[in-house]
Image 1 (cartoon, one colour):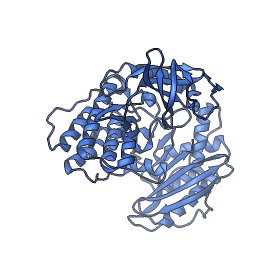
Image 2 (image 1 turned 120 degrees about the horizontal axis):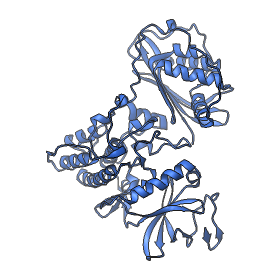
Image 3 (image 1 turned 180 degrees about the vertical axis):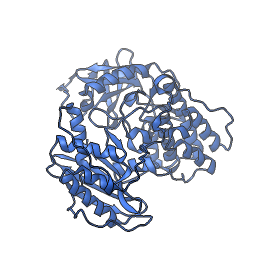
Image 4 (image 1 turned 90 degrees about the vertical axis):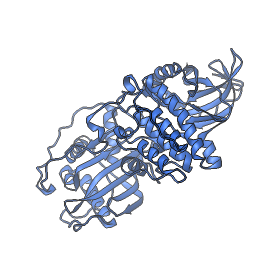
Length: 482
């Protein structure tokens, strides 16, 4: 793409130079940056009007699946006609770069507003959310789920709000919530629990995200602020939403419902949530019938896993010591992407503590586990993993244990053990190093750490509970660095 100083290639990590011509637009200045790319203020030369030009980051543009999805969904987003949706004028690819041309909106965004001034009055926050909810209803009626609803994507021109950046939207019935590179489709602070697992999610995921936005607007921060990505994920998955300081009891009830873990317990549509929030902030009651306006792939579905992350019920109540041996697997050829995903995150679960003997006693009965309980189980897990002993791993897991990865999840002891058995049959574990270890006891004991295995690094979290009077590992969450 031609500039006054030559050409800008895909390998450039610097900004496109001022004055460059891209997609029929002249770059004027940088307007904003994000994980998906850079937004520029530009002039559309054919009409002489100001526009926002977003260039997708090279690492995403080089992903063929992402590129195809971006092209399809940009066309879908351009067809949405709503006063609170940023109009999309054009989208495409030029010289290897994906771009999208949108209306330029003079003003700011909600993220900058909150960062500069802190929490805003509940009535104004509800009015903004009400407008964004209307935009989401329009998208859902078109069969699209936005998937990245957050304050930075809420543009403010005076008191008029726009929902921007459909670059992460995708057809709601797609089969995964991560890109092929292992990146989450969305921002973790505002993601619904169901988005942390492979499988479809519908319009109610955007209702949850919009609930997080309303909470952030009235308090100045998202509802679940934690030190690491795994801790934030666990909070979205399991912890009740905190009360929003500065919000009335009625508005808090509205927010709490929007942040329900189970999609079936949330408002059926973003519009229903927006109307309820506005009414609560104004001291009114909502009398309209609730309904989903989503159509096609965005429509709510009733599925077996509606009770999120609970895992299948394990009817085998025998002590783990009496369980039959885990069957072994013969190595066989598997798709390269599957081996990589399993190898990366399974290695993330191999916590590298010094081993303890198999016969070590477990903690005494009690309603909580101690810090030493957590570390003791981590040591036993590390020893079993280092020896590729899936059967021994099974003996320290709860019956409904979960293994959670960005690209995969197993629920139930048998499924988790089978996954480890496959890994041991198809790969060779050589090392696993930990740093920044933090352990804590309680009703749910937790251990978080940074890990390194080979050249792979990331965050890992263990959750430990009491099951049948013994401390066992309930959940392993591993998130490799991108």
